[in-house]
Length: 285
Image: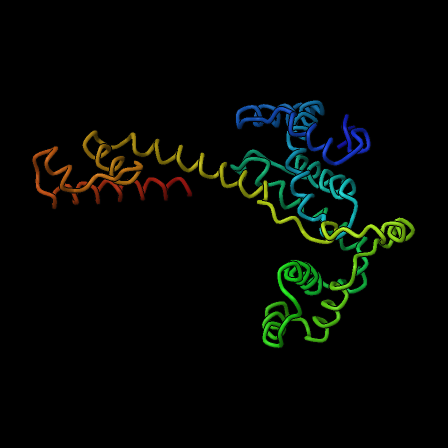
């Protein structure tokens, strides 16, 4: 894909300015996203692909921000994440049945993590898949606790299939100040202006998590509402006010309303829920 993005952190001058810019870019609803993907995939319309990418740049920026604890320039993390986004747009298919954000998050994180491994000072210590898992897990743990106990080391060793010696070495190096292997002079100059913020991972809520959860909830509620609408009026009334309302009504309430026993209301409710369950299972097949 050959697309030139019209904006970068270099153009805005700072990450905060860049974030403000991308946050003002219009987001796409599901229908707009689908239309643009059809245009790109069926007609190779790169302008449509560019519009999709621009709408997701805020997504990349928030993911990249969670990796700033490794001491690497945020503009580089954003750039690598954007490469992952562009790869995901190229590989994405509407047949997957999800929004692009749910699909792209894996590509974005993969590109950023590879960049961290290549450029952080522990690159030689994280050469295997198991050691990479150790690298990321220990980096996260070291922002919350002191030195690992022997018990914790044994648990991590078993879980990640690495030696306790590897854990000791990695923990020792992670506990030292961050140094960028490609910018020694810059770090020497900044050493007198040490800021703890530069080595701690951002603990703010992950943007992609809430986005994916919201997307899933909207789809799930849409499907549930469609199924509920297939029920007869009495069953629908019972299910909605027993399960889908903020204030749940009792079996006694519906017993008085419809002039039947509470056991009969329970039977109607159970039958309706079973019907909904079968309908939901059919959607998965």
